[in-house]
Structure formats: C-alpha cells, structure tokens
Image (cartoon, rainbow, N blue to C red; front, side):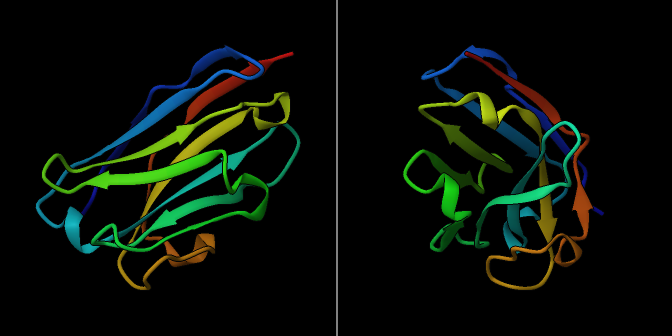
Length: 124
C-alpha cells in the first residue's frame, strides 16, 4: 500500500513557476514508477509526466516538454514536478500516481495509487 500526498499548488501569474511535491508513504517507493496527471475544469484527466523507479528515464506530454521537469528523491520518498513558464491553460488539479509495473507509464490504468490532488491556478 502506498499513500500519496501532493503539495505546492497555488495561484501564480502567467510566466511564473511552481514546484509540486508528492510525498509517498511506505518502504517500496523506490520500486514504483511515478507519474503526474492533471485535470482542467470541464476536461478529462490527462497525462503530464512520468519517471522510472530509478529516475533515469522521464517522459512528458508533448505540450509540456521544455517547461515541466519531473524528478524524484528516493531517499525522501518524494517526486517533484517543476513547472516553469506557466500559462493560464496549465490551470488544473494536479495528481501524482504510483505505478507498480512499467517503466514510465502514460495511461491512468497503469497506475495503482493516486493522491488527492493539488490545485494550480495560473492567472493571465
């Protein structure tokens, strides 16, 4: 069992930055691939980024490449999402997820555990 708690969301102006954190419980964090998803108002939840259990492989949604960076610290049981050059269309609830199988899963059904989400609002 893995419990995930996101933090770091908030209100930021367009062009600004935020770093989201996701703290995981349990001793097996380092064996899970981790992902970030987001859900904008009125839209379905979508993939943002994923990182392999070792941190050696990362993948991103095409629209986020170059602006978002996913990383992890297995000693702290934490995964991060650094978000730069934020745009109003990045406004969403951001969720982290842990996947037991796969290297860098992109699909929601590949993840076993989910956090409650953290709100990110980007003002224009």
